[in-house]
Each structure stands twice: as structure tokens, then as C-alpha cells.
Image (cartoon, rainbow, N blue to C red; front, side):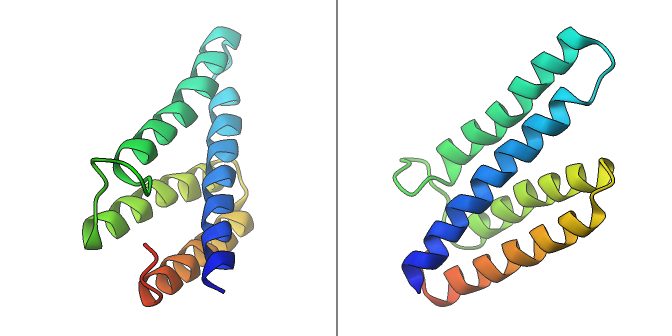
Length: 110
């Protein structure tokens, strides 16, 4: 079950990147700005995750700092879903995030 939860966590990360890219590409009426945002926004998410949240990162946060940063990043993704009128998806996404984080905390796999 722990391995399944870890795989699910990775799936949540991939979904986050896809949602942020979609949101960025559709944020502006200017094609050039949309392309830039569609690349920069998910790339920023990836870099922050890589530096502070990746399991093998030398700067990885731990404990509550790790949980808070994950909740912050996933909350941003939830906001983007709400801003593109996908409120039900946002609700389901955040429920999955909370379940995943609670299980990760209980099983000490954060």
C-alpha cells in the first residue's frame, strides 16, 4: 500500500504540471506570452519541487515545512483549476492531495 501511495503522489505531481501548463498556455490573449507562461509556470513548479521536495534533494525540507510547501504548491494547482471553471476537479484534486499526505504522514513516507 505504501508503494501505491508513493505512485499516487507522483501522479499528483504530474497532474499538477499538466494543469499548470494548460493554465499558462491559456492565460493570455497574446500567443507569445501564453507560450512563455505555459513553459515558465510549470517549470517553476518543477524547480521548486526538485530543490525542496524531491526525495534525493540535498536541500529537501522535512516535517511540517515539507507538508506546508506541498500543500501550498497543490493549493496553487487547485486555484488554477477553479480559475478555469473546473471547480469539481479542484475539489477532487485537493481531496486526493489531503488523503495522500495523511497516508504519507502515517506511513512515514514523506
